Length: 145
Image (cartoon, rainbow, N blue to C red; front, side, top):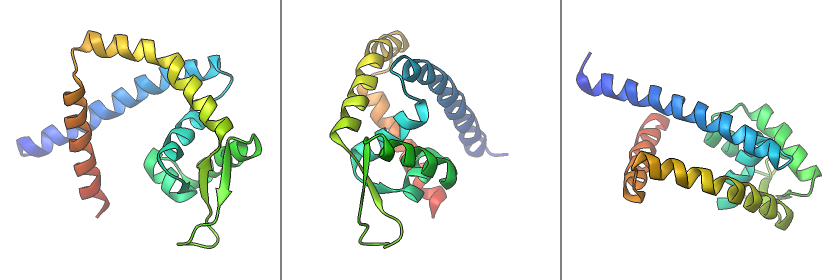
């Protein structure tokens, strides 16, 4: 095995570990705000721009059916709204509503102090995070083609 492939595999293992740790912390924080981490993640994805369920599922690494249930719950709660999708008539785009934005702001606000403390303790800079994100995006793009 080449060093490059070994380093890639170790990076992916680290990403899974980080995601698991972050998810457990987020689950606790979401519960404190009366919601679930699944709802938080969906709201976060559509806060950037409206998206169809399959695109949300891909972004979160989840199955479409599980994301559809969360989207249905958020829509029923008035935190998401369906919009026509010009690219696919039967797969609407989901956009965050003002109520959903308020919930997302509360979730982000409640977690900010802990995240800032963790980042400070880690010595990771904003530039480090931008470079890591760029690396992960390039790998994701390469894997998806």
